[in-house]
Length: 501
Figure (cartoon, rainbow, N blue to C red):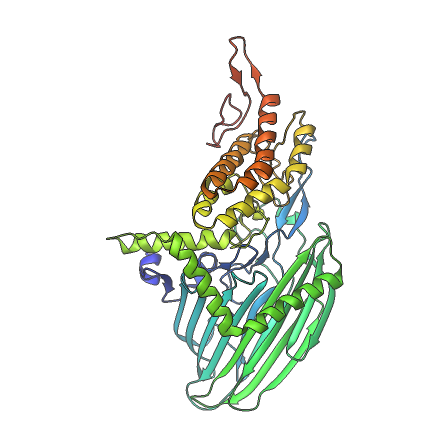
């Protein structure tokens, strides 16, 4: 019923024609934008109300302890969990000092549209403030496929009746308040994660730009974010900027009459590292921001469209006679592309970068369900994900040795390469993960004709898989090779014999 009422069936977009606050968590995932490196949940521009705020950088995580009732050999002692990094998509609106909040005043209309060809999320709303001042708001948001560290927003507001003082407040915010623990049901891991995963190291504001650098306490990852703005209005505009420990903001204020418009174009750039200095990360995000400003808003839109034209030229699947299935196929292709396009030797998490589901972990599903599609539509992204697996070989070899085996034992779930599953049957016993990776290596090498990868990274992955199985299994009295005591890919027949590919 919700789908039929709120979403139209169109071949190249997903259009939401009304705002239902009861399903914000779902629509925030549906309208998420990502490029495989940076992910923004589809939160409202003003940030509230929300189901779950979310800004994610692929590979940025915090460590947490894995509690057990009893100690046992071979159990992982810590796990990695994706964290919500600095939110750069916040743009708050004030009309004669009253904040734009869809829960107050009167929302006359509200539409959001995810465009699969343009690669942008647009929003159009008309709202009457509690004091009776009507305004029209339009925004367009993108996460760039061509400049992987960059995102941008164009935000327009105009009064519809009478003069109004309009203030638009653009913000960078780390450690934003998340829904209370247990909102989605009790989870014993909630207490293990800090409420403020990022510690401020550096903040600065200059003209209409703000930069902040933070660091995680346990994983030791440094995260930088910077924003700058172009502000356009028919009358004089007052612009102020300031910073605080967890972020900073730029506020533009102008008095407008009907027919006049205040436009704010916001450029945001992100960077992170586990080894570079504060100065190195700071300079990295400034450089990325410079690239965005050089391209300009129209340039970023053109780059995005050209990238997707190229993708759809080789990836589109046309379905005759069923418009709903046609839309669903393109929606799925678009989201899979978003999950891995610019991962660049990082994992593809189970939820992509649309939310913190599964703690942001990558599973064997990446190689079995995601990479077959990317192999034939975006082969560079498939190769990147396989190179990430190869980069985790040292951790997988150490894990196999810890368990008493040769070769490499790849993890059931991970971000950085270490096993993060504390449940043995669904973790260490699932050695079919090596088969999923080997299958993806062979498929990619054959399809792409990438002999260089096949003879180097691919060969190493296959070799370590063979070594693991040879040391894990044995020949029975009839000379048959057996691999006993494993959990197979069906995931329901735990600790069975010979349940592998």
